[in-house]
Image 1 (tube, rainbow, N blue to C red):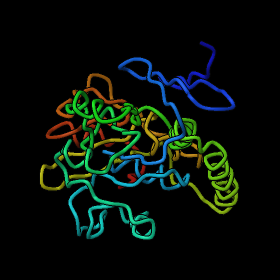
Image 2: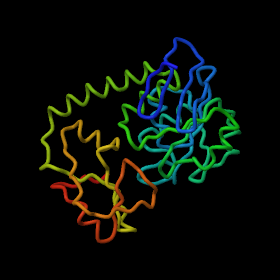
Image 3: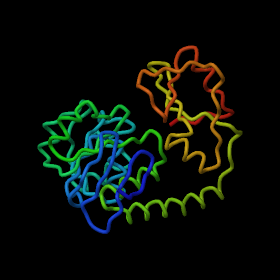
Length: 253
């Protein structure tokens, strides 16, 4: 099969459907353009909304905090979710029955992260075509392009990326960079630990586009893998926390 290979995901380019898509579990055939997409990953949902994909329901995170609204949807797209009447599947723990109730014709799950429903893959794939999306090793632009091809929203994805590139060029002209290199992280004060963004992460790649350089970890520094092997973060805690934050500036996400 001739097709386009994008970081672990190949999508057949044909004028019409069906499309054959390969992920880590094999090749899947989508007979038609999806009309009812369920996203079990709250991280992926924002990208789907951005390209006007027909996502009807989404998993959620803990509600009513600095990152999530009362529905557990991320604040940067929560209002759009309300306008489009996006249903909340569940908070945290994945639930196959909640997914089935939405009668999806496509289910998307993330390969890694706290919002991954990978453990329910067999149950979900019995409901509808289910694709595994790995977002921990690519820029948001690559992810958006990937989702656009899967959902038939290629042109919308291109338009969003084009708009961003124009804004990026304007912002770069107005910026004065901090001393380089920098350490970019999410800090957890309760555990006295941090997740350090890598150059492979969407956050790290965005900083690079803006002109920043990420600091390199000292040799021999031990990092935790309590969240499994991931490309986008390095887990630092305990005595390694201070040593690992060796940039000339710290960026807290």
